[in-house]
Length: 363
Image 1 (tube, rainbow, N blue to C red):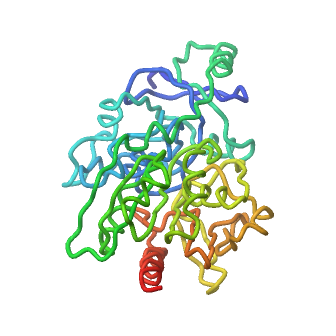
Image 2 (tube, helix red, strand yellow):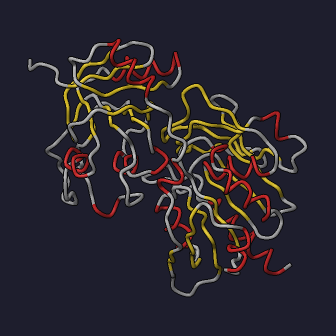
């Protein structure tokens, strides 16, 4: 057996040895895990993972390579990728490069050969921690010093949001939608296009006045990374837009809508990441299997008196998964109705957004 050439040190002092792939560099980041069995390309291109190192709980990663059509954004977002087994010889007629090649191109380090079962259990027991991906020669004491001296970054949304306005046109459009880009996944835009929407994507710090000047029929607030309380420009914009246009928030967008109405958010112990979370629609009693990716949640007790109602609940831990203000034609969900590669139980929410825009236009 060859000698280990990479090591992960966590804040609790635990060490995980393995082998390097991707970029040869050290990095400090928050370590989180994802339970998905497929979709690693969509995961590494999801801006919601900005400044995070992702542990894949499914053991074999990279086996179908990377396909140009399947990216969820133009950026490869995680700070690191941690896996049990990496496949650098994929079997897939569509693949154009391997996962290690993609990480190397984007200067992102990876480690394989790690006991990911032990690592995931550690995160579940102790909560998400920051970690250092480094050389095996670095001692625990040295590693902990590096971690403690590395500041926590608060500009995740600013980093991954677009820098200027851009457009997507569709055939025979019925509606105009402004998407506030906090780190939007491409499949959100695909779904809006499928539903007959012309789309204007705007940076996260776009003002309410500028959005209204675009004469939209509705506003989508996208997913994105980090602590929602750090994204004050969007919160202030949404406050100014309450009741003026139909709004639909996804993931971080859901949290930002909650904060704009006066509810509160908090950080979960280890977050929700994966395509297997059961969510109950309180209006219909229907159970949806959902895809999720977030560290923060809306405080259930803080919703009362805000004008919002809880519409969906997570059946694993009873966290808030959806909010609605029928008076303002505003709703949001914590999970991903546009999830790619799946599950696809929740795409009906795009129909609900279209219906809200129709009703608003006809009011």
